[in-house]
Length: 287
Ligand SMILES: O=c1ccn([C@@H]2O[C@@H]3COP(=O)(O)O[C@H]3[C@H]2O)c(=O)[nH]1
Image (cartoon, rainbow, N blue to C red; front, side, top):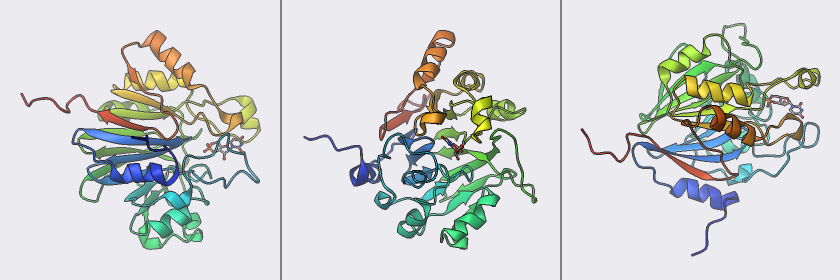
C-alpha cells in the first residue's frame, strides 16, 4: 500500500481520520510553532502559520508549509499565542474561520481587534485569560500561562499580550509555551503542572537580532533545563526552522540534552509528521 503523503489535503485527511486512544495525544508539526493536537475526537490547531503571508514584505519562509490554509477542515478550536504574523497569521485565519466556522479562536485580548478585522466573528473569539481555567467541548481543560516575549507585557486591562497554553485532553497534559523566555515564576507554575509533553521554543535571543527588531525566546539550553526541572515526560523543541535569520539547530537541543540529561525523553518532529505521544499510564493494567 502506498504511504499517504504528509502534505496538503492528504495530511489533513490523516488528522481527521486519526482515532486517538485514551492516554495518548496525536501531534502534527507544521513548522515554527504551528502544531495540530488531537485527542478524544477534538482537533486543536495552535498558531497555524501555513500561508506565505510574510514572504513579500517580511521574512520569507525557508520552506513551504506542509499544508495551505484551504486544506484545513474539521478543526474544533484554534489557539493563538500572540499577535506576531507567524503565529496569528492573516493569511491563514480568515480561511480557517470561513471553513471551520464553528471552531472558536482563543487568543490574547490584544488580538481581538485584528481578528475582527480579518473577518472572524466576535462570537467565535475567546480571550486567553490566565486568571481562570476554561473547559471547552466538555473534554478539554485549558490553562493559560503568561509568556514573556522577551518581556511580560500586559494590555490596559491587565491581559497578557503573549501566552502559552496547557491542554488537558484524553488523559494527557500538554504545554505549548508560545514565544517566551523563562521569567521569574514560570518554573514554579510548571513544576505544579508537570506536563507530560512540553513543547518549547529553542531559537534564543541576542543583541543583533534584537537590533533588527527580532525579539527572542528561551534558547536550547534553557529549554532543555526547563523541561527537566518541571518534570516534563517528553520535551519537543519548536521555533527553529521557518526563518533563516531566526533559526536554530534542533540538534543542539538534542546534543545538550543527551550530554547533560540522558534520561530525559525528547522528540524532534519531522515536517508534517504525526507523532503519537503515549503517556506512561496508557495501556497499563489497573493496579
Ligand atoms: O528574519 C526575521 C525573523 C523574524 N522576524 C520577526 O521577529 C519576530 C520574532 O518573534 P516571532 O517569531 O513571534 O515573530 C517574528 C517576526 O515578526 C523578523 O522581523 N525578521
